[in-house]
Image: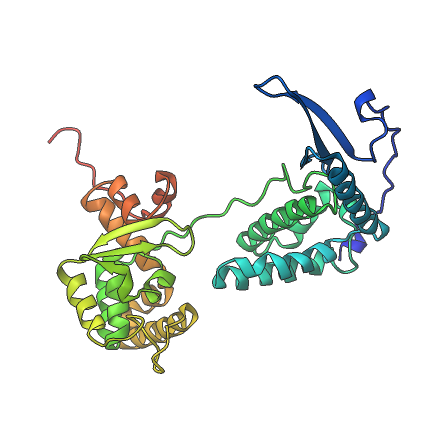
Length: 358
């Protein structure tokens, strides 16, 4: 795709500056600096200059520093012997970086990489020939799915930064400074009567999942990962999978009634599938889609509202209701956000304002 637009350009080669006297005689890309310690002793430290101009400390042993420099220079020559393409880096990113991410993030990133490769990988585009206007062309190409386009460009940036780290390029990411699409955040608020219609149409386990989601305001993935060991002295100690933030939720009232009943089943997870294994988020999504259809059929006059609800909207309802009954700080603590700005995105109703004067 990019081959239709991309003109490969040659970079100008500039003459290198003469090396400083103390670095003369050292291998290419190796330099030294002398430092005086507190005891007055002068010590020489060695550094390797990476392709992105950052320095890698190699210690004070000149012999070992020279050996390591030879190895790094060899790796650099091998890397430069072939033109680094976005395809090359994307494959390495998928093999080395993606496995470190959450399961859901991996699925999303793989889809995004597939889209990016349709444009930058057919034919494979050399990294150093990708320029800012190509990113703009990509956004134009994906104009019918603006939210996805923004996410794909964000992933492109992360892949590029990894490419710099791995030594494939020394140039700044071409996506920097490119205006992305303005996307309207989801603003559906699940009204109480819609929530009750979903509850009454759900089977017992799904009804408990709905209630726990609303009472705690946690993400679906953290709810299905709930284990008895996370409940300590009447408190659910949540370590959110997405952000790694910690939230402590008091188990009282209706929440205690539900969790006590689930724990009485003596299973490794409080919410399991029919085989007794941990319930995966994707299965919960499928259950909820069926539940929506069932509730919409039962209440056809509210079918549009019911079919528009996603399970994640219950988290937003919990945050909104907490805000309406208390304040933004309380909602922020419940949702586990690090800043109030993120919490405000989840608040989908404003408090009622009284007239200036009655």
